[in-house]
Image (cartoon, rainbow, N blue to C red; front, side):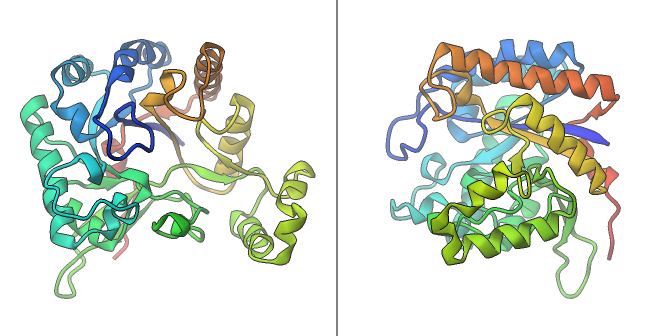
Length: 319
């Protein structure tokens, strides 16, 4: 089993799509990196256009990268990545909803800035707000990306104008992009680690979906199933789960026969008040304690840390 941590390194302005981007949270990354260093973990920092182009931010990240302590990948927020030819709507905050050529031009713009400012070509990608689709996959492959992590298993973002991943498992798999009937082009999808504490993820997901889509949801049956430990859906994210819950999920994922653990969160959660997940200085400490508790578990379990791009050769390609 291997462990990845994929971090959306982005502006402070949570869910404020029209405001000028502030980047104070980037100053917290060196301290976070020290925590990862203690446990020999190399995070993958997936950076947005404002982060890639602001001098202080890319200086912090470039130093960490040049010291061999992390990987830098791309994270497109359509609303602050040029060119801006789309209408400003909630629907268009999802990259997958833009016209395909405009998707490509935004991805290419960020990619070129990262290449210029970090003197390397990134290979790892995550779409902002989980806004992923076949057209996004084709575009990022065309630009040069080989590994994506834009899928959130067992969740649908349709009510936010986004994709439906509600039947997708957390198991990595290749997306074949071969043209003219050829299968030699493929993109590796490494989903965020989301699953259930109980065995047989597919079955637990069917139960949860059936209740959620029925009148029983008004009786709070989802909460009842959670309390009774019949169906507990958990994210491998310190924003949403305790250290203990993440450890239980990791053990459940391993029993499911999946060899990848992909922890995920936002850099802005490092600063109280920037996201809903940390509202006070004490919340900041709790957030970091959750990460450390899980890293201690990894060390005790001899689970190896890799970066996102390093996962590419570890998954067999099936034609």
